[in-house]
Length: 316
Ligand SMILES: C[S@@+](CC[C@H](N)C(=O)[O-])C[C@H]1O[C@@H](n2cnc3c(N)ncnc32)[C@H](O)[C@@H]1O
Image (cartoon, rainbow, N blue to C red; front, side):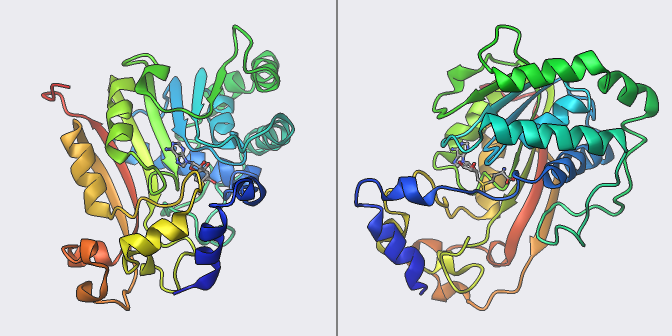
């Protein structure tokens, strides 16, 4: 049992403590990270026969900046929606990341890989610049000055009528976005944090066009709440309540199979499920009672990259 997360969780019952803590979420304060993540989702989409040229994209949980979405816009997408539960991103960081991203695309920089970001998934077989997707013609059009200016103006003022960016925080209803309006919905290290998992898959189903797809990297590890990577599954529900405290989000503790079952029940068909396995020091019967029916496979699945499309026969 780690004491620090427990003490912090209990402290959040004191009003005001949360505000002090939330000051950085992960990777999107780095342009190279955002560039790498966006291109990895695209490369694998193409490998799976999915459209690598989505026009309208939506992201859950962009974090410290909207940089992954800016990479999407710079590389040719027309419109970007971002939904978070805490307003981590701000204009000056977004502009800085945008300028750096433009330089990365202008120079067709290879995708930053495992040597630079060893913990970032999904892994690719090759990290060269994906010129088969973003060919010269496409990139030249995408990097046209007036287009980049429009994206920059949209960052400075999301409220503009013609803004290419919508950043909504907090979001809590599927009605914030029109039905069947988006080509691709993605997230990076977010779905393990979402409290209402079923509602979120339901919302994604409603937003997605019939030809669209979802693309999510999910991290099932304990995020510092235990000594072992899967030690969060050994905490009792009572202990977990204390660790969570009043934090706006922590972990839903759902394993890989719950995601697959939920998204399938909500009308998706999985086209890609790249799992990462890690050794478990726990046996199933050492877990908290509610996790003792977990499969051996879930116990060692520490991450997964999932892409899915809408099942044609599903009736919402
Ligand atoms: C670990 S950070 C990842 C941030 C970013 N995607 C990255 O790759 O660095 C998790 C993010 O998920 C967001 N989040 C938590 N619950 C959410 C929810 N229900 N809907 C959307 N975002 C959520 C958090 O506010 C935070 O921005």
